Length: 255
Image 1 (cartoon, rainbow, N blue to C red):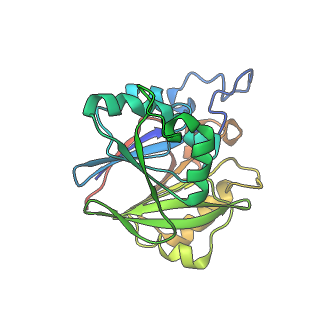
Image 2: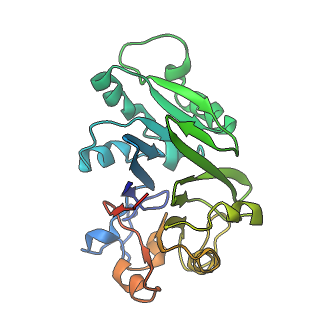
Image 3: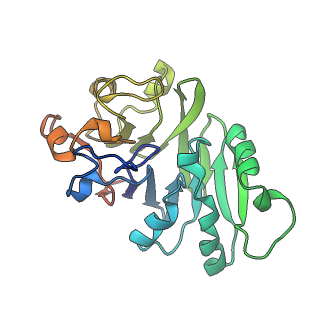
């Protein structure tokens, strides 16, 4: 299983427009963060989680030729705004792309992209097939996907477990029941917005506390704001098996 980290930034990305802090002015490419997303290559499938505003740039940067399915964590703009650009894959492969999301996200996508769902087959629009999921395992072909439901302030959002990999972003609270789904993972990619507390995201200490409880073999932190600090400086203070993720990072896991 190959995990490519397409983006690791929070909703504004890093650098932030008009900001002159040391992170936004950093010359280290690891301090440049597109909006959070990952691609998983498993069982001859390319699965993308979230299509944020930088989706087109991410696909071009990683030279992605095909995606087979899209999982959506929730409907906030920094996680769905780039969905229009999947039409390039529709055109190349002459097929609809299955998307998987809960009912709230599906309803929001229909408001955000009414031309996709109007029933009027306007030439060149993205073609998707919507699959409504809830907090129960489902299959994409032979691959089992296990949703993990958490709270992003008061909004229920989904993380996902695929075999020994867990992806969980935009979380401020997780129940004991949902934590159980994350145990025994080889890799967890987890929300950690900044060092100070935040209403709707884990901060660094909260993320580290959860990882200490779950004890994955490896963990990467994502959805990072410029307030976290410089990539290399923060990493120097983290445990050896936990690091800030960076855009373009690739992890290979044995299944």
